[in-house]
Length: 289
Image (cartoon, rainbow, N blue to C red; front, side, top):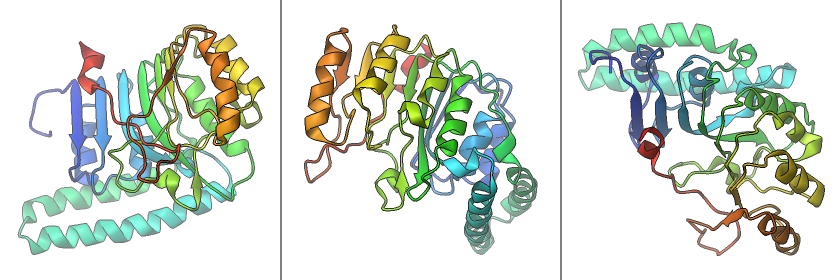
């Protein structure tokens, strides 16, 4: 990517994406309109946030997942970032040693330069606003620590998203392309679409047509759902997993159908047949036709 002409669309799936890849991608920050990164070894949560805070021309951004502590302020978030930074540094150093061992010496200087620069940058990422305000399509799975009961983390994430008032498609769910399936881990949860968590901050998203949240264990009540239906009059599609309780979920569905909105069916079901699911990615390139 470093030697090629300015890029408009980039899709990288199931491939290594390390610091040098991020440094190469940065060269196209003023021209890139579409970016999809899924399932690549070395792709860090903080990189996803860094991209959203650094690429102003993006219209379509589809990333695997970002840990909420990358986006929010506060002592707990800073502690979580430091802990993750230590783990990532160990992994990055292991990758560097592999480069040396395999004779790829020409990449070592690039890797070292990228590591030094981005390590200095990511410590302050939690206070950086997103600049991709032209986004029409956003896929980003937010992972929260399960023990984090305070709603201020959810509110801060909603506040970031609320600035994206051009959004027509918002996908907060799990992708089948994710290797770790973080939302289904024992210690994480997804962004909760509830008024008490800050959902009402998303009132600017008047152009929203599609809302997906597959695999995030939502617990919408009737009031939350009616807020969504009343505020986003352009909505045409919504994930059917409105509540993890089947009985409650099925009581909510008629409210959606009465508005002529499609309840999206599962595209991938877990082996145990549960209602939790992962979303297969839609046609990325159709966003640019």
